[in-house]
Length: 464
Ligand code: PMP
Image (cartoon, rainbow, N blue to C red; front, side):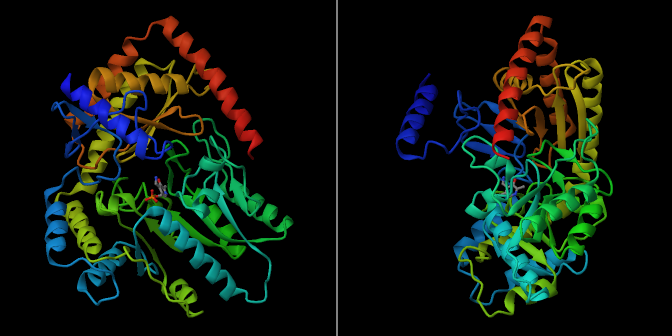
């Protein structure tokens, strides 16, 4: 009771002094978390929650190696990157070694948004350098339902935001490839989507300078791109003079198991790779890696580049500790094996509930479970996804999130030290919630979902 009162008091103080649209998970009954370890989070009473959604604490909450590296550095020196320090160079070398040629030049930043913002500036510089006489305005292409960050530019790059609540609609210089929906067999041809976006830009008097895409579409609903999808898009985009940017903010750093970067699953080499969240295990760092040619085009006009926190001494030190943890604890292999185990268990669950689980998909520990109202229509079931999330949290202390155009895809993206026992705890919780659903509950959730999908579809159409 005392803990509940403390939580309530903090909430009230927060309401007064923190922006109201800074959302909390589980808005109605927010979680008050005071400690984390590995894949577990603890409230003030010591209750343990299984964290299946934190793709920032990538190598585990309160990782001792990372915490020690950062704190030691903070006790020694933490200043901006204008002083020569070996850590920045060592991190650049380590990152270059993890990337295919010609991705060899690193810029360090503090957030994924900044990384995508800088990628756009580099793309614009490359477009100007390649065709100095072409004065058409520079346009950009993105994939539907994408989220690329919170700055003004990144909101423009994010249909997820401008089609979402409070969104202002599609900016005229942004062109959108439809989101491939493998489960429903729609929009699978990336090249066709790219050609349409390029034609739309040219009809509007512009030229596309950059194509941004995640390599697995997270906000789009944990969509695994069809094989060859990015290759088709990249070919069309490059022929039109655009630079191809892979946003690996969510899917990079070994999460997908088979490869370090998710773009490698598509067999492509982007011109720029942006990264964030997992690279600092919670320390605010991010960056991009590009080719010497693009770095040169960006530098040639003579404007100096500087970001105060980007590459401050603690950041590359932290980044190196995260890479060491992935390597030494074999966490990429763990993501592959525990991810495969998770998928096996989830497919068994789907076989028990084919009426409401439409699709189970994933690579490593980047997994999506698509909830539907019925297998005939394959209609999205946001109400069931929400029910599942709330009951898993309240009855089992298992934390899940949902994503996708209608928030009907349960998203699993835990720290990549997730164990098979933890995967069992997660799937058992979902199984118990689904088993407790009576036919009339399902009918009720389906009804609510239909109304919700209708309202969201109308908003999407209005803001297109
Ligand atoms: N890109 C993707 C795919 C993301 O998921 C996010 C953050 N959710 C960003 C970019 C922006 O990163 P940040 O919040 O660090 O600015």
